Amino acid sequence: MLDGKRKSIQPMASRLPDGNEQALQQFVSQSLGDWRPVRQRLAQQMTAVLDPDAWVIDDTGFPKYGNASVGVARQYSGTLGKVANCQVGVSIHAATDQASCPINWRLFLPESWDANQARRRAAHLPERVRHRPKWQLALDMLDELGGWGLAPPVVVTDAGYGESGGLRLGLEERGLAYVVQVKGTTSAYPEAVHQQLAPYAGRGRPPRARYRTRRSSLAQLVAKAGRPAAKTVAWREGPAAGCARGLWPCRSARPG
Image (tube, one colour):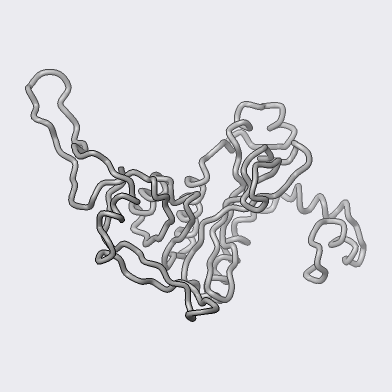
C-alpha cells in the first residue's frame, strides 16, 4: 500500500491482491479499532528518529465540493489562501531543517455543525463531539502528547495562533517554551507596568486589580525601545549574505 503516488481508496485498492475497493472503503471509514495506540506509536517513533528542533502548530485545508463530510464549511483555508468550501485539520508537526512529520492532529468542527442535528446524524458524528476553537485543539493535542511521554523543545506558530491570548496563556501554564508570531497592532504594556488596586472606600464591591496605564501596541513599544534594545538574529540561509537576518526587540511586554 506504500507504492504509488495516489493514496485515495480506488488506486490503493487496485494495488492489493484482491482489488476489493468496497472492503477497503469500509475498513477506512467504518473500522471500530482504536486509533490512539497507532497514533501514539507514530508520534513516539518519529520524534525519536527526527530529534526535532521544534513542534509546529499549524492547520491545513482540504477542499470539498459537497457538504456531507464532517466539519466541511465555507471557511478560510491556508492551503488555498482564501475562503472556500473545505475541511480544516489542526496539526502539530515535529520539525527540523531537514524534515517534519505530523505527530498529532484534530479535525476542526465549525460552530455551524453544533446545532444541525440532521447533518450530524447523517455524518455519524458523536454527540460528545462539539466545536472547539483551533487554539484549544492545539492545547488538547499538547496535553495528549505529554501523556505519551513526549515534550516539545519549543512550540512555534504563526500569527493565526500566536494572536490567541488563550493559547499563549495555556503554553505559560504548562511551562512550555514557545516562540509565536503576533501582529504589530496587538495591544500590550511595557514589562515594568503592573496591575494595581484602586483605594477601597468600604462600600460596594471591592475594586479588582487592573492596569491603570494606557495600553500601547507592540509596534509602538518596539519603536520606543529603539535599535539598542534589538538583537540581530539569523533564521535561515539566504542566497546573498549567507543567511536571512532581522532585528528582534529583546525587551518583554505584558499582554494588553
